[in-house]
Image (tube, rainbow, N blue to C red; front, side, top):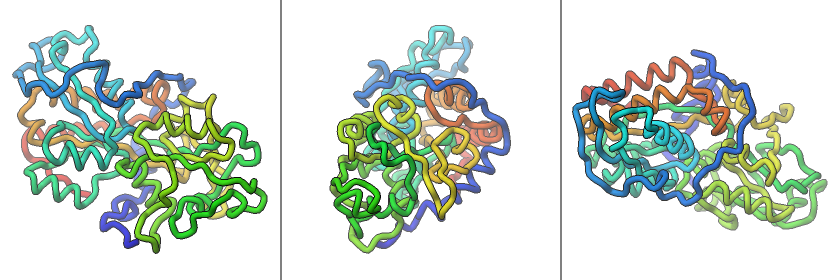
Length: 364
């Protein structure tokens, strides 16, 4: 299969991108990661708002006047827990004037959110666990939408096996690629490594609408000769907790999911350390994601609709709040991602101000 025109390796150099972003400021990674409860219905944030009005106000947040209107956020299930928590905090009663802002959050996948919600103009923001693709950008512009990029956090995409798989603690990216490639499709673990059990694979991962799927197939599998990017005999879902549950149910299962969903399921599955080009195994961690030393470290984004940002004061104020919250310790401690640093916050605020003024133009 021919590679996408916007191969992620051409969009960003993953290691250089993460390391340069992380070096601009320190973020707090100390403290234990809690089993933060996450909604599994994927439909809304605490029952707030469906399609509602686009009512606006001229008020600034923080008590200068009431903000009113709905905010629709589509896209990535990876970024969903961050958007869910930030929107919950934005509606906290301590923020006088936010009570009439409601949210509709869904987990459609990065690609599914762009395709079915954001590009048609039905959402204000689209979360993404990979950069927007060239064809998505063009379709946005064909529909009169300029997507405004905000780099929010960093993830350590995690490969997991069953807790009873005591025969495996680490795996190479090469072996992962062999297992998941449609060109090879080994039937048993022993087909890949004779020291592994002669038992068939039970594979779990994100659906093809997911940015995590895009990132994994690009980074781990790469180009294929088949007319598909990944083998088809796996259970795909936009519900990342279901990946953990599936792996938990079979000793010979294998899956991959965002780090935030792993740390909330450590009693169900075991994370594998990864080997790249013969290096020592590196376990998934926030420190590894921040430094870029972990082989599957990746950036996380949200994209705003510039026209709607210009029109809706309540959306402007929420995005400003979202950006300023992205460097808070709870992003690491309660959710499981590397928070933004000072430079990322500054860059995001500059993008927001340019969007409000109508001067923003997306570029790689």
